[in-house]
Image (cartoon, rainbow, N blue to C red; front, side, top):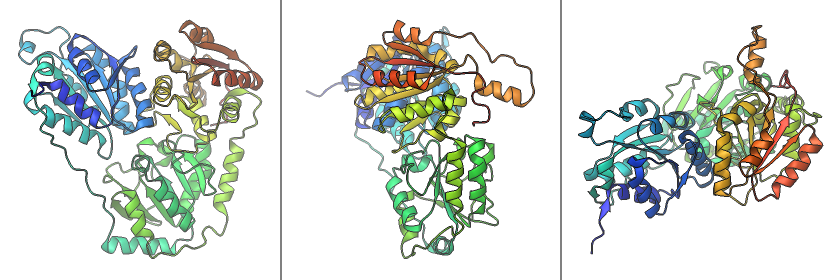
Length: 537
């Protein structure tokens, strides 16, 4: 007997085929068939406390298994609650399948309760948006997966009418073949090889596209052969271990770090932009090099329409094959006779010392020293993230995940829950400012319900520290940045985990050691003095 498929089943099976094993959200009556179909397809649905956090928990899983995020939201307020995380996925290049319930088209003409045009809302912040049709469910499902996972990755929205989800449908097995990898050739290749052969002071800037292409091994082989020091964006940290002698660490967040890195980039006679997506970068990296006076090769999956920088050669190709043909027949040579990269690396180490007795830098240094090297970290937006991105050494891709382009507050806690859910055998630590933690504290109950046991470190200074610092720098009156202290450790205990407050590196070390062996999550409230970031970022 031929199996009867619903349109929702066709979606769910295609998503399972794409590697999805988890979906996150908060159901309403309009998405019950979707949830049922996902479950039957082998995709476990997890209830979160807010749709925005649901998407970030899913992103944490994505960084572990590589599969697209599935976010499920009911119509109206449910869909709108997810706006931030969808926009974040769009800017942070995260493949996400956004499923929203909606009333049937005919119903819209005489029923207005909670009804709005979801597709109009999601169009500006997604790569594509569809309204599910039972006759074309298989095509829409394949298009959604293909578009979400094509360079550059991003979210795709599917609005699912109630009756359509239940309507009979078929899967004709149509799948779009992946595009073949390309490499430069002809005059462009000859020019690139001549620049590489002549370069005495080359530098590479590596970004998110390289991470998504899994190009780390190819890039490492290339920079080692040609002795090219490299900088990564903070999203690409760890694509080559940061203790590598050619590594200059992450860049783009800290003006203090940029004082040492940007002059080096401007001294280079060859800049290799390898999968560098400047959406992560702050204004200091606008025109970080001069394509009129420096040789610049930009290898990226999309044409440059951002104008954050320019290049003498723009190569639209996959990184690994492009570097292979570029390196072919080119001999390595000694680079940087003046030793400037080593000087810059030493200056960076001095700018971000690991020996602070306490304060935000002391908290980060103690966490990095106490937690095992294989610890996976998440970071929320705020002053602590700028410091953390310089001080937290990564030995693997995605060893530190964060909202890099949109810079969303409240992302670290849910991302850590998702990461721990997907990789329960690895230590996972989340770093949040106290304001960001308060935004999402309810998801501690989700961690307890899922049996996930990350370590949640909270920098507690009762202030929006980064905004307060900017206020003072502009000599503006203090306003809207301070709030009352809260007992974050008690919150951890109230939601079914452990909680401890620490005020020294010794106390923090003991708390971390205990948290590593705990079967429940642990909230560690690190009370730090106000103004602790002054001169440090």
